[in-house]
Amino acid sequence: MTTSPGPTHPATETQARLEDLEDSLALALLELRRANGEQPALISNEAARRIFVEAAGPGE
Image (cartoon, rainbow, N blue to C red; front, top):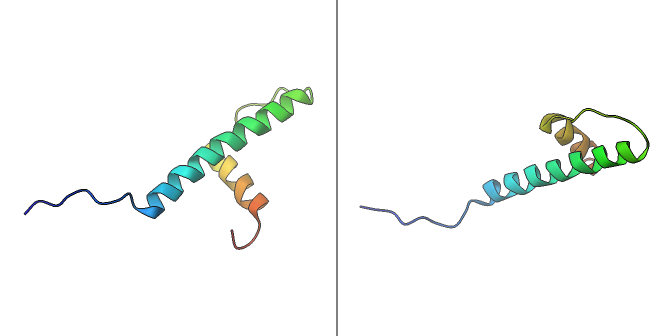
């Protein structure tokens, strides 16, 4: 019996969107730091994730 591919799992979609947001946040922080005259190093996705979670606040 073959199974047809079902709709994308919502958790997978959410994870992909979160990763895109993390990348966007990391780039925005980099641009902000450069605009302030800093020469920052790129931050990791994990660091961006922590920043994003902290910014979202509890329950997000």
